[in-house]
Image (cartoon, rainbow, N blue to C red; front, top):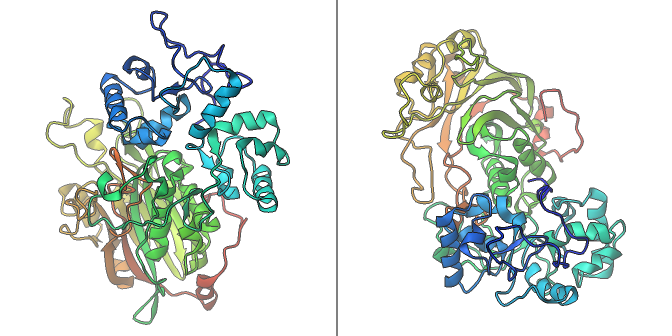
Length: 556
């Protein structure tokens, strides 16, 4: 989200001076009792009508907020609002800059100095703890540069924990103006000692909860304190770093994963980031095809985390993290619930994997608007050791269920979006080491995938191996994702293909109006291939990450 709070609102020079900064509502209503923070709405005192002025909050959601507020005797933190039915983490991020939490008995008639004093206990519940945050985490705060973040940590080391937010002005390059900009994005909590169990800059208590998806992580299961998952430790499956060998031969694991509406905002969620990165490391996945990227820059968030390791679990991984690179399609390759989506690849270059080129396969079929109604695969040529692979990344939408057609006919764009164009056969002919993988939205026996069978491609995932997942149905019920390989590549297939189901949940991930959800409705699907690699490339498997490595024009 951008830092602009809206051109119709002016921010006072002193954020505690509320005398001339009332929230704009109808003149027929008197909202003078609402305590505002930079014209934010106090969700502990707001009425239904006032709550309905927030983006995306209708009458029913406003009623849910009021009812939930009464049940818990008032919100303790802004994050508590995500637990209200109809809000969730996504909508909370949209309205976060417009709301605040303070005592129900607070009054806007206090003097600015008394307001600041009364307000600080509640501000300490939101934002980032500047006494435990790392430089990388501090840089996520709007207005904090790399240099300022390092100065904050250095000051903290030399002088001890900050006692108040005002102490930040003692840090080099932080003046009162910058302090006012970041004041409501940070907090100070001195009673909590720095811990190594961190995700995204927030420390947890030592109480841990299992992460596998063998059961639904409901609120009562997690015993959530106020603020949702911020005090719960994430637990990963206990696995040994894989050897990268099978039957005495070197293997590389190739996988596909639909990350489901993956925006930059979603990729920045510490729970999402941990699950994606740790799933790659724990399962020794070296080349990943990704679908349903809403923002092209989202994939790079995981690449940076794998290389730099700001999360505790990634940083403490016992095996080599590798040197990761990514590439994303320049043009949309499919449709998502939020509009168009992109596809991409993420790979560990220290494992002898190099990208030759990548491009979107254009379909000759267009609709009346000159657009391509069919999904457009993203093709990339990779060198994996001495093996050359042609990877075709496919994202097809699942056909609408009965009653979801909304009156559209059989030839609508919605129908075409889950069908491959017949011209794909001409494109695939003559490709070496062909792997067609991704979200097909259909089981492998579907007639819509006959084009692949005609090119003598075979699916590695059988119809009875399900690839979808949720906390309510951890074992899944549909086979939507797959890896198809050409006949010539079958001899390199190591005979090992699996659907990853463990470790896909995290306490940070919303699950409707609770927490502990999954990254996506899709599981990662991976397969092993034998590869011939030079001794130099084998040594690279234990190489230390080299930062600042140059990338080709296809890489990000």
